[in-house]
Length: 270
Image (cartoon, helix red, strand yellow):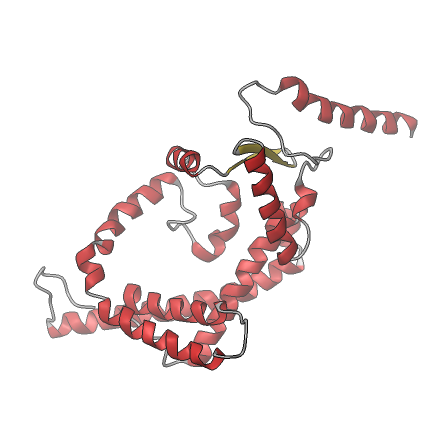
């Protein structure tokens, strides 16, 4: 028992000494408050309000310490950058997604947000023409209608004081994305729309909570957690909605193709 205690003490001292001894002069300063083994993981714990305040506190500390600091989550090292120009440099140089993006792949797949560099670059080239000014101008009618709809939705809150605007912005954004990107109007099905909104909110909360709780970073431990069961429930709703939208889009495309409706560029309207 004594030998085990001495071993643990020696390992803890080594864990503390190693970064201090091996740190390069080029390395940025480390955020104060790191603990043996878990590093700064303990500061992430708490509810969403506490987490947000922690992020703001880390940002303010980074500014005071020169704009760049080092944070450790277990054995992983993260760098916090607050200077806009430095952030742009880092973003352009580090295009490979961090491992935490893997958590969102069951929901988003290998898309722009989560895909590998090779997939991300290929998809970006394919999507770039879709965001040209000419194409965006063609959706002015949708943007105007959705803006007016958004204002009407907010009218019920006039004179009531502060309120959660995300309830309205989230719904309006979802409707606009489906109308423009997929060409499908989901406003006719308010029940399905509401379920999808709630599922998105829940899965975002789940992903945030998993990041906060360092022991859930392990896929094995996470697979046995109640959080994983909640995620699976949300995914069933999200994927069901996505499949229905894609099926409607495909049906509209085939129908227009059958009728011979083509644009001036030779592509079928859908």
